[in-house]
Length: 153
Image 1 (cartoon, rainbow, N blue to C red):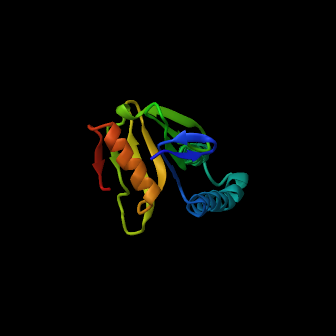
Image 2 (cartoon, rainbow, N blue to C red; image 1 turned 120 degrees about the vertical axis):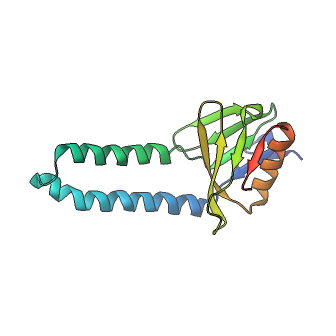
C-alpha cells in the first residue's frame, strides 16, 4: 500500500512519538546540566585535575554526538532505499545493505531503540515497539530483503 507522506509517495514511514523523543532529550539536557552544576565549582577551584575534566568533557560531548544521531523518522522510498532522519544527519542506505534489525534489549516498556546493522556502522532508531507503522515498515523491509534477520522483535 502506497500512502502519500509529505507530498511524496512512499511505501512505509515510521515516526517516533514526539513525546518519547522529547523526554529522552529533556533527560539528556538535565543530566548535562546536573553534571556541569556539580563539576563547574570544583573546576574553578582547581579541585579536579585537568585530565579528569578533559575526560568528563569528552564523555559529555560524545554522548551528545551519539544521541543526536539517533533517528526519529525511518522511510522506505520507492527505489528500495531506507532513509533514517536524525537531528544530526540523514542516512540513506539500500534495504539490501541491512543485515540485522534488533529490537529493544529490555522490553519492559513498549519504548526503546531499534538497532540496524549496516555494512560499516550501526544506526539506532527511537521506537514504540507496538506501533502499527513500525510493524508495516519492518515487514516491508523483510519483503524487500529476504536475508534481513530480525532479533527480539
